Image (cartoon, rainbow, N blue to C red; front, side, top):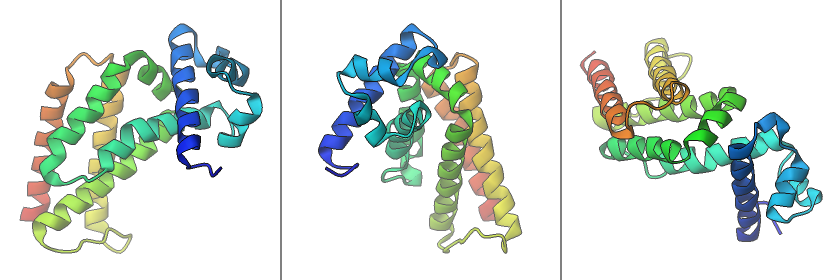
Amino acid sequence: MTKNSPCAIKTKNKMGQAVKKLMKLKSFDKITVSDITTECGFHRQTFYYHFQDRYELIDWIIYNELLVPFMDEFTFNKLYDKFNTLLETIESDKLFYQRAMRISSGEVSEYLNVAARQLFVNTISSLSNKELTVTQDNDEYMLIVEFVGFGLTGIVMSWVQRGMKESPAELTEKLVKLVEKCKNFVINN
């Protein structure tokens, strides 16, 4: 069995659901690998076959539940739907994501930042009919792309930390308008 076989994915999903359930009952620092494996009926060795530690499991959940769907078949025309789905997913499991992002905020921030930067590069490339390569040699684009990446990531992280008071639809509208303004600025300059 490989670590990405259907059986392995099913096993990882069960562990993910177990840790999510446990995190609704107690803080992450009180949850052990034994708690997770007991909750899903696995042996500790099974856990360590798939993950190095509990933190890697949290990263795996966030990556697979938030970032893979966000980046999959992303186009500028799908911007609203992608952001809204991302935010609705977070809101649907609010307590877990609030706690998980506190635990793994650096990893989450980096994942989202990379995704947001790539999104912006792809968007500008497709709209300007040019292949843009964002490298250290292209300082102006690099600065704009990093600014947009950090900005979008910061807004999402801040929304989670503030308790998600705006609806996903409200925040999505604001994010889409922001990306539109940034896109227009880059294209016009």
